[in-house]
Image (cartoon, rainbow, N blue to C red; front, side):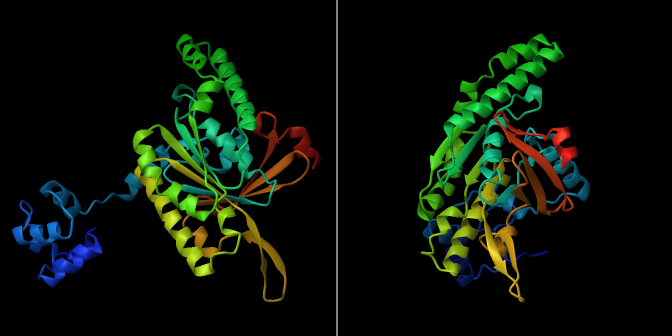
Length: 338
Protein backbone atom coordinates (compact mmCIF):
# COMPACT_ATOMS: atom_id res chain seq x y z
CA UNK A 1 0.00 0.00 0.00
CA UNK A 2 1.40 3.38 -1.04
CA UNK A 3 1.69 6.01 1.70
CA UNK A 4 1.46 9.74 1.13
CA UNK A 5 4.72 11.66 1.45
CA UNK A 6 2.93 14.04 3.84
CA UNK A 7 2.45 11.25 6.40
CA UNK A 8 6.17 11.25 7.20
CA UNK A 9 7.98 13.58 9.65
CA UNK A 10 9.72 15.81 7.11
CA UNK A 11 9.92 19.61 7.53
CA UNK A 12 7.16 21.50 5.72
CA UNK A 13 9.67 23.19 3.38
CA UNK A 14 11.02 19.78 2.32
CA UNK A 15 7.53 18.35 1.79
CA UNK A 16 6.55 21.32 -0.35
CA UNK A 17 9.65 20.98 -2.55
CA UNK A 18 9.23 17.22 -2.95
CA UNK A 19 5.55 17.52 -3.92
CA UNK A 20 6.34 20.27 -6.44
CA UNK A 21 8.81 17.92 -8.11
CA UNK A 22 6.39 15.00 -8.32
CA UNK A 23 7.18 13.00 -5.19
CA UNK A 24 3.62 12.16 -4.12
CA UNK A 25 4.22 8.90 -2.26
CA UNK A 26 6.99 7.87 0.08
CA UNK A 27 7.76 4.97 -2.25
CA UNK A 28 8.64 7.53 -4.96
CA UNK A 29 11.46 8.69 -2.69
CA UNK A 30 12.64 5.44 -1.12
CA UNK A 31 12.38 1.91 -2.60
CA UNK A 32 13.31 0.10 0.59
CA UNK A 33 17.03 0.07 -0.14
CA UNK A 34 18.12 3.30 -1.81
CA UNK A 35 17.01 6.94 -1.67
CA UNK A 36 16.05 8.44 -5.03
CA UNK A 37 19.01 10.54 -6.22
CA UNK A 38 16.86 13.47 -7.38
CA UNK A 39 14.90 13.46 -4.13
CA UNK A 40 18.10 13.28 -2.10
CA UNK A 41 19.44 16.34 -3.96
CA UNK A 42 16.21 18.27 -3.39
CA UNK A 43 16.33 17.57 0.34
CA UNK A 44 19.97 18.59 0.50
CA UNK A 45 19.11 21.90 -1.18
CA UNK A 46 16.61 22.47 1.65
CA UNK A 47 19.30 21.75 4.24
CA UNK A 48 17.78 18.40 5.21
CA UNK A 49 19.60 15.08 4.99
CA UNK A 50 18.68 11.51 5.96
CA UNK A 51 20.57 8.29 5.41
CA UNK A 52 18.95 4.99 4.28
CA UNK A 53 18.84 3.72 7.87
CA UNK A 54 16.77 6.75 8.91
CA UNK A 55 14.42 6.16 5.98
CA UNK A 56 14.07 2.51 6.91
CA UNK A 57 13.06 3.44 10.46
CA UNK A 58 10.40 5.97 9.44
CA UNK A 59 9.01 3.69 6.72
CA UNK A 60 7.98 1.09 9.27
CA UNK A 61 4.76 1.63 11.17
CA UNK A 62 5.43 0.55 14.78
CA UNK A 63 2.59 -1.14 16.60
CA UNK A 64 1.90 -2.72 19.97
CA UNK A 65 -0.89 -4.91 21.22
CA UNK A 66 -3.16 -3.84 24.07
CA UNK A 67 -1.44 -6.49 26.19
CA UNK A 68 1.96 -4.89 25.50
CA UNK A 69 0.62 -1.48 26.51
CA UNK A 70 -0.95 -2.87 29.68
CA UNK A 71 2.30 -4.60 30.64
CA UNK A 72 4.26 -1.40 30.00
CA UNK A 73 1.79 0.47 32.19
CA UNK A 74 2.13 -2.06 35.01
CA UNK A 75 5.93 -1.96 34.82
CA UNK A 76 6.19 1.85 34.73
CA UNK A 77 8.24 3.16 37.67
CA UNK A 78 6.65 5.48 40.22
CA UNK A 79 7.94 8.19 42.53
CA UNK A 80 6.49 7.73 46.02
CA UNK A 81 5.06 10.63 48.01
CA UNK A 82 5.75 9.23 51.53
CA UNK A 83 2.00 9.21 52.15
CA UNK A 84 0.61 5.70 51.73
CA UNK A 85 -2.93 6.98 51.28
CA UNK A 86 -1.84 9.27 48.45
CA UNK A 87 0.37 6.58 46.89
CA UNK A 88 -2.58 4.16 46.96
CA UNK A 89 -4.74 6.81 45.31
CA UNK A 90 -2.10 7.22 42.58
CA UNK A 91 -1.44 3.47 42.10
CA UNK A 92 2.02 3.69 43.64
CA UNK A 93 2.92 7.35 43.22
CA UNK A 94 3.71 9.75 40.39
CA UNK A 95 4.20 7.77 37.16
CA UNK A 96 7.15 8.38 34.83
CA UNK A 97 6.44 9.07 31.18
CA UNK A 98 3.50 11.31 32.07
CA UNK A 99 2.62 14.89 32.96
CA UNK A 100 0.99 15.33 36.37
CA UNK A 101 -0.69 18.61 37.30
CA UNK A 102 -0.96 19.68 40.94
CA UNK A 103 -3.51 22.46 41.27
CA UNK A 104 -4.75 24.25 44.35
CA UNK A 105 -5.07 27.51 46.25
CA UNK A 106 -2.05 29.13 47.93
CA UNK A 107 -1.04 27.08 50.98
CA UNK A 108 -2.59 23.86 49.69
CA UNK A 109 0.73 21.98 49.59
CA UNK A 110 1.73 22.15 45.91
CA UNK A 111 5.30 23.28 46.52
CA UNK A 112 5.72 21.04 49.59
CA UNK A 113 4.68 17.98 47.59
CA UNK A 114 6.96 19.03 44.72
CA UNK A 115 9.95 19.29 47.08
CA UNK A 116 9.08 15.90 48.59
CA UNK A 117 9.03 14.30 45.13
CA UNK A 118 12.42 15.84 44.29
CA UNK A 119 13.88 14.15 47.36
CA UNK A 120 12.07 10.84 46.87
CA UNK A 121 13.25 10.37 43.28
CA UNK A 122 16.83 10.06 44.62
CA UNK A 123 16.06 7.03 46.86
CA UNK A 124 18.28 4.02 45.96
CA UNK A 125 16.77 1.28 43.81
CA UNK A 126 17.50 -1.27 46.55
CA UNK A 127 14.88 0.51 48.66
CA UNK A 128 12.31 0.78 45.89
CA UNK A 129 13.39 4.17 44.58
CA UNK A 130 14.63 5.29 41.17
CA UNK A 131 18.14 6.39 42.21
CA UNK A 132 17.54 9.38 39.98
CA UNK A 133 17.89 13.14 39.94
CA UNK A 134 15.45 16.03 39.62
CA UNK A 135 15.25 19.35 37.76
CA UNK A 136 13.27 22.06 39.55
CA UNK A 137 12.17 25.05 37.44
CA UNK A 138 10.87 27.80 39.71
CA UNK A 139 8.84 30.81 38.58
CA UNK A 140 7.29 32.18 41.79
CA UNK A 141 10.07 32.18 44.44
CA UNK A 142 8.61 29.19 46.30
CA UNK A 143 11.79 27.11 46.37
CA UNK A 144 13.34 27.02 49.86
CA UNK A 145 16.69 25.20 50.20
CA UNK A 146 16.43 24.97 53.99
CA UNK A 147 13.03 23.28 53.70
CA UNK A 148 14.40 20.89 51.09
CA UNK A 149 17.26 20.03 53.45
CA UNK A 150 14.76 19.18 56.23
CA UNK A 151 12.87 16.82 53.94
CA UNK A 152 16.12 15.27 52.72
CA UNK A 153 17.31 14.60 56.28
CA UNK A 154 14.01 12.91 57.16
CA UNK A 155 14.23 10.77 54.03
CA UNK A 156 17.77 9.66 54.90
CA UNK A 157 16.73 8.79 58.46
CA UNK A 158 13.79 6.76 57.16
CA UNK A 159 15.91 4.84 54.62
CA UNK A 160 18.57 4.06 57.22
CA UNK A 161 15.89 2.75 59.57
CA UNK A 162 14.45 0.51 56.85
CA UNK A 163 17.91 -0.84 56.01
CA UNK A 164 18.62 -1.54 59.68
CA UNK A 165 15.39 -3.53 60.15
CA UNK A 166 16.02 -5.57 57.00
CA UNK A 167 19.42 -6.56 58.47
CA UNK A 168 21.20 -6.85 55.13
CA UNK A 169 24.85 -5.80 55.15
CA UNK A 170 24.95 -4.87 51.47
CA UNK A 171 21.83 -2.74 51.86
CA UNK A 172 23.23 -0.94 54.89
CA UNK A 173 26.45 -0.22 53.00
CA UNK A 174 24.53 1.23 50.06
CA UNK A 175 22.31 3.37 52.29
CA UNK A 176 25.36 4.63 54.20
CA UNK A 177 26.30 6.56 51.04
CA UNK A 178 22.79 7.99 50.80
CA UNK A 179 23.13 11.24 52.76
CA UNK A 180 21.67 14.76 52.68
CA UNK A 181 24.54 16.08 50.58
CA UNK A 182 24.07 13.49 47.83
CA UNK A 183 20.34 14.25 47.73
CA UNK A 184 20.86 18.00 47.42
CA UNK A 185 23.52 17.49 44.74
CA UNK A 186 21.03 15.42 42.75
CA UNK A 187 18.43 18.21 42.63
CA UNK A 188 19.18 20.73 39.88
CA UNK A 189 17.57 24.17 40.16
CA UNK A 190 16.86 27.00 37.76
CA UNK A 191 14.77 30.14 38.08
CA UNK A 192 12.57 31.47 35.27
CA UNK A 193 11.34 35.04 35.76
CA UNK A 194 8.59 35.60 33.23
CA UNK A 195 7.22 33.55 30.37
CA UNK A 196 10.19 34.29 28.07
CA UNK A 197 12.67 32.71 30.49
CA UNK A 198 10.26 29.84 31.12
CA UNK A 199 10.10 29.10 27.39
CA UNK A 200 13.88 29.20 27.17
CA UNK A 201 14.22 26.87 30.16
CA UNK A 202 11.72 24.33 28.85
CA UNK A 203 13.16 24.21 25.35
CA UNK A 204 16.69 23.71 26.69
CA UNK A 205 15.67 20.68 28.79
CA UNK A 206 16.54 18.12 26.12
CA UNK A 207 20.11 19.43 25.85
CA UNK A 208 20.35 19.39 29.64
CA UNK A 209 19.14 15.78 29.80
CA UNK A 210 21.74 14.66 27.27
CA UNK A 211 24.37 15.61 29.87
CA UNK A 212 22.35 14.58 32.94
CA UNK A 213 20.84 11.22 32.05
CA UNK A 214 19.92 10.33 35.65
CA UNK A 215 17.19 12.97 35.82
CA UNK A 216 13.84 11.20 36.33
CA UNK A 217 11.71 14.13 37.50
CA UNK A 218 11.09 17.62 36.17
CA UNK A 219 9.07 20.08 38.26
CA UNK A 220 7.70 23.40 36.96
CA UNK A 221 6.48 25.43 39.93
CA UNK A 222 4.39 27.27 38.95
CA UNK A 223 3.36 27.09 35.31
CA UNK A 224 0.57 29.64 35.78
CA UNK A 225 2.55 32.36 37.57
CA UNK A 226 4.43 33.84 34.54
CA UNK A 227 1.14 34.30 32.67
CA UNK A 228 -0.74 36.21 35.39
CA UNK A 229 0.40 39.76 34.58
CA UNK A 230 -2.08 40.17 31.71
CA UNK A 231 0.54 41.31 29.18
CA UNK A 232 -0.42 38.55 26.74
CA UNK A 233 -3.82 38.20 25.13
CA UNK A 234 -5.63 34.90 25.66
CA UNK A 235 -4.80 33.55 22.19
CA UNK A 236 -1.07 34.25 22.51
CA UNK A 237 -1.04 32.81 26.02
CA UNK A 238 -2.79 29.63 24.84
CA UNK A 239 -0.26 29.18 22.02
CA UNK A 240 2.71 29.59 24.37
CA UNK A 241 1.24 27.20 26.94
CA UNK A 242 0.51 24.69 24.21
CA UNK A 243 4.09 24.81 22.96
CA UNK A 244 5.46 24.42 26.52
CA UNK A 245 3.24 21.45 27.34
CA UNK A 246 3.89 19.75 24.00
CA UNK A 247 7.62 19.98 24.65
CA UNK A 248 7.22 18.68 28.20
CA UNK A 249 5.19 15.74 26.90
CA UNK A 250 7.89 14.92 24.34
CA UNK A 251 10.52 15.08 27.10
CA UNK A 252 8.49 12.82 29.42
CA UNK A 253 8.10 10.14 26.74
CA UNK A 254 11.51 10.42 25.09
CA UNK A 255 13.50 10.31 28.34
CA UNK A 256 11.03 8.19 30.34
CA UNK A 257 10.72 10.62 33.23
CA UNK A 258 7.95 12.22 35.26
CA UNK A 259 6.89 15.82 34.71
CA UNK A 260 5.04 17.64 37.49
CA UNK A 261 3.57 21.11 36.91
CA UNK A 262 1.79 23.19 39.52
CA UNK A 263 -1.20 25.36 38.71
CA UNK A 264 -3.32 27.86 40.59
CA UNK A 265 -7.07 28.24 40.90
CA UNK A 266 -9.34 30.83 39.36
CA UNK A 267 -12.99 31.76 39.85
CA UNK A 268 -15.53 30.67 37.25
CA UNK A 269 -18.86 32.47 37.02
CA UNK A 270 -21.75 30.22 36.01
CA UNK A 271 -24.86 31.08 33.93
CA UNK A 272 -26.74 32.02 37.12
CA UNK A 273 -23.83 34.06 38.50
CA UNK A 274 -22.79 31.21 40.78
CA UNK A 275 -19.09 31.05 41.63
CA UNK A 276 -16.81 28.03 41.60
CA UNK A 277 -13.06 27.49 41.86
CA UNK A 278 -11.44 25.73 38.91
CA UNK A 279 -7.83 25.20 37.75
CA UNK A 280 -6.41 28.25 35.98
CA UNK A 281 -5.06 28.55 32.40
CA UNK A 282 -8.24 27.42 30.66
CA UNK A 283 -9.91 24.13 29.80
CA UNK A 284 -7.50 23.19 26.99
CA UNK A 285 -4.61 23.13 29.48
CA UNK A 286 -6.04 20.09 31.25
CA UNK A 287 -6.01 18.01 28.06
CA UNK A 288 -2.22 17.98 27.99
CA UNK A 289 -1.91 16.47 31.47
CA UNK A 290 -2.31 12.73 32.02
CA UNK A 291 -3.24 13.25 35.67
CA UNK A 292 -4.79 16.27 37.39
CA UNK A 293 -4.78 16.35 41.19
CA UNK A 294 -6.36 19.14 43.22
CA UNK A 295 -4.87 19.84 46.65
CA UNK A 296 -6.65 21.54 49.53
CA UNK A 297 -6.10 22.54 53.16
CA UNK A 298 -8.74 21.01 55.46
CA UNK A 299 -7.57 22.18 58.89
CA UNK A 300 -4.41 22.99 60.83
CA UNK A 301 -2.49 19.83 59.97
CA UNK A 302 -4.66 17.98 57.48
CA UNK A 303 -4.63 18.33 53.70
CA UNK A 304 -6.53 16.54 50.95
CA UNK A 305 -5.66 15.39 47.44
CA UNK A 306 -8.47 14.79 44.95
CA UNK A 307 -8.10 13.20 41.51
CA UNK A 308 -9.90 15.50 39.08
CA UNK A 309 -8.78 13.79 35.89
CA UNK A 310 -7.17 10.43 35.18
CA UNK A 311 -7.44 7.88 32.39
CA UNK A 312 -7.01 5.08 34.95
CA UNK A 313 -8.56 6.22 38.23
CA UNK A 314 -12.03 7.38 39.29
CA UNK A 315 -12.47 10.67 41.13
CA UNK A 316 -11.13 9.63 44.53
CA UNK A 317 -9.43 11.48 47.36
CA UNK A 318 -6.82 10.95 50.05
CA UNK A 319 -5.78 12.85 53.17
CA UNK A 320 -2.23 13.67 54.20
CA UNK A 321 -0.19 15.85 56.52
CA UNK A 322 2.59 18.35 55.97
CA UNK A 323 4.96 18.10 58.92
CA UNK A 324 8.61 18.95 59.56
CA UNK A 325 9.66 15.68 57.91
CA UNK A 326 7.64 16.46 54.76
CA UNK A 327 4.55 14.74 53.35
CA UNK A 328 3.19 12.03 55.64
CA UNK A 329 -0.03 10.12 56.34
CA UNK A 330 -2.54 11.59 58.77
CA UNK A 331 -2.64 10.29 62.32
CA UNK A 332 -5.50 7.84 62.77
CA UNK A 333 -6.65 9.70 65.89
CA UNK A 334 -6.92 12.99 64.00
CA UNK A 335 -8.81 11.39 61.10
CA UNK A 336 -11.29 9.69 63.44
CA UNK A 337 -11.97 12.94 65.29
CA UNK A 338 -12.95 14.81 62.11
